[in-house]
Length: 411
Ligand code: NIG
Ligand code: FE
Image 1 (tube, rainbow, N blue to C red):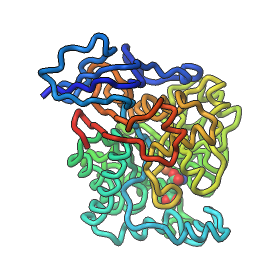
Image 2 (spheres, rainbow, N blue to C red; image 1 turned 45 degrees about the vertical axis):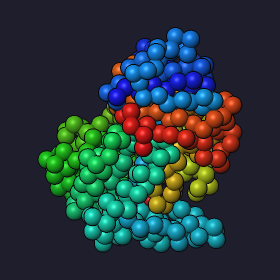
Image 3 (cartoon, rainbow, N blue to C red; image 1 turned 90 degrees about the horizontal axis):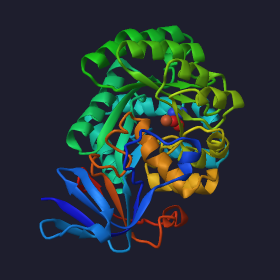
């Protein structure tokens, strides 16, 4: 049955003409209709408008949203939601004074998660991961990217990607899958980087392509992890299999990685806690979406991405969670949006644009997700009654979501 949402206090992110992203000063504008209705037909947004022009509702299933705000679901373009176990001890170690780097050097960090993942059966990883997926859907996420990268062995990486595939098959949410074999060097390859990269390129990638397990390729381009040259080899190899790049870069150091990513036409560059003027200039002439992950900055106490500087230079910006057991054990996009406003001084309009249409761009799905546009998926957040959408980042600790619809169905 067709559905109609009526009496919507504010219908946000209304884009009559489809756009793929918003950039620079455009990000300050969040088009909306006050006192609106919206019609859902066959899981798609078929129409919307002002209540003054609302059609006869007698043939519809009616959702009355008096006092409530409606916006597109969040597009979370960067997560590691599939993992085994947890890293609670590292959290406590950090409270007691150790840094992320010191913990990693002691065998903690990514290698800790990789050990656990390789010991855990696929079925159990699926069970643990689906709980997290269901949680973030209820928190308003309607499209999500999920990475591998805690396997670091042929079998481990395939296992993770198969779990992601199974989640995509069993849940209505759009899921993009990213192969992150180049997340860290396993101990046995510590002194043999070429050997591990050969394994990624010659063993992992062909199998992943054969089973059609990934949409994108990623690497942790960082001092002490993958160098610029090593990451370039990985991006080039991914391209051979049709996998565009989304790269972890500039989290701790700026080593001209962004330049290499742009050269390889990366879809996105993610983290960017440390950004130089040269990095900004290079991104400015590109199609690559910068992605900030403020919950990671919050959780491990590192700088926030300099959003103001980037937007004022005319760049676009997307926001994502980075949901993972080490640096961000939260997939809550509402917290990300609030933290971007509070700590990165993004306006609510900029943050909502970054978490919807620009997140969709960073997953290559702007044509179907990220805005209220006729013909797009009916993926909607209906808030509880609130005075204005500013309440979302303002009341940062409150659960303000009443309903989430994914492809027109209530989650
Ligand atoms: O995005 N920086 C690299 N990767 C993850 C964290 C990995 C981990 O600690 O498990 C991130 O923060
Ligand atoms: Fe990450």
